[in-house]
Image 1: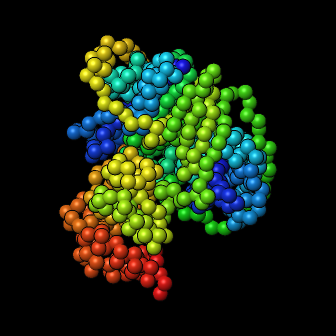
Image 2: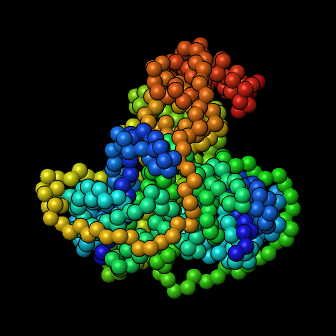
Length: 252
Length: 326
C-alpha cells in the first residue's frame, strides 16, 4: 500500500501575522515556518503504518515555495521515503487551483492512500482534501483518529470523530483521509534520520496549469478591539460583571 | 450560467440547525444583492417531515431530498443530493453552514463541481456585480477578502456570523429522488457510537467558558463547568490544558484547535498565548478573569476581573444563578 502525505509549509502558531505592504501576503519578517500541525500528525501515522508493514512506501507531496525543501527534508528525516515539491509561482492560489494541481500530481504518483491534515492552520479552509477526493473519485473519510489495515483487502478500517460521535468506517483504496488530533503523536527526527534524509530523493517540478476560481482582494489585519475595562479585583468585581451581563449584554 | 443561490439546510433530528438558518439568511441577502432566486435544499432521511414542520422559510424554491442513505455523517450521499438540487436550481452560488459536517460537504461538493470555494465566511457582499467574501485566516490573526471570478462557487457561513432570515413562505416545494452512488469506491460506516444527547459544538455555541492552566489540575475544572452551566454555555480549554490531558481535544480553542466567535467568551485563568488569542478574538464580547493584571488576555478583553479563579468563579456562578432565579 502506497501512501502520499500532502504537507503544507505554514507560519508557526507563535508567529505574529502582519500583512505585508502589498496588502496580499504575510510579512515574512521574523516568521518561522513549520509543517502544518495536522499534516504532521498525518505524516506520523503514515510512517507508523509503514513500520507496521501496512504501507510499503510513504511519499510526501508539497505545493510551496522553493525553500519548502527544508520541511520536506524534515518529513523524510521522520521517515518518509521520498518527496515531491511543486514549486509555487503565485502569491495567491485558491482552494480550487490548489486541489487541481495536487490532484494532477497525485494522478502521476498513483497512491492507494492520500493523507492530509483536516485543515492547514494558515488558510483555515479545510476544503482541499475533500476537493481532491471528489476530483479523483477516491473514497473519502475525514477527521480520522484511528487507522488499521484490513487483512486481505486493499482497504483501511478507520475511526473518525464527528461532533462527539465516533464511527468505524471501512474505506477502500484509493482513498483520501484527513487526520484529526488524537490519531498520532508526531515524533522528533533522530540524528540518524536526518543524515539518511539528505540522500533520499526529492523531486522539484512546476505545478500543472490551473486557474484560480477566486481573486485575492486583500489580506488585512483583523478589526481592532476597543479598549476594555477592569471591573474590579477578586470577588469584589462579581456584582458589576453580573450587572453588565444582565443589563448591557442581556445574556442572563 | 445562472447566478441563483442554493443553501444547504443541515438538519438535526426533526429540525433545522441554527447555523443552517443563518446560512439561509446569508443566502437571502446574496440572492437579493444579485437579483436572483434563492433556493434551499433539505437532504435527510426525514426531509419531508422537517420541511413540513420548519418555520416558514423565505426561499423561492425549497428542494426536498428524502432517502435513508442520507442518515450517514459521510458526505457522499448528501453531496449527490446537493448536486441534484443545484442542477434543478441552476445554482451559481452554493452556501453551506460552516459546521463540521457542512464544511466537509462543501469541500466534496466543490471538488465534484470543479467549483471555487471560500470556507468559513463572516461576510458576503455584492460589489459591482462581483461576490466578495470576507473570511478570517490564521485563526483570526488576519482577514482575507476574496472575490469569486466564476460560478459555480461554494461559500461556507461561519456560525454566529449571520442573522437568520425573517419568515416568509417558500414559493414552491419540489421533491427529488436521491441519485444512486455509481461505481466509484466509497467509504461505508460499519459502526456508530453516538452520545445520547449531541453536545453543542464549540464553534456553534453562543456562550463559551474556557479554562487554562491556572486551574492547577483537571479536578478543579468543575468550576468552569459550573460557570458554563449557569450561563447556558459550553466549556472550552486552552492548549496547555488539552496537551496536559486534563480536557479532551475537541474542547481546545486556538489556532491548532477550534476558532470560535460566540456572543460571549469568558476566559478563566488563561494568560492569552498568541495562538489562543487567535482562536477567540473574533468573539463579540470577551470577559477575562485572571490573577495577573499584566496577562495578555486583558488586551483583548472587553471586561476583566483581576483575581483568583478559585475565589471569583464560585462567587460568579452563584451570583448568576441568583440573578437568573430572581
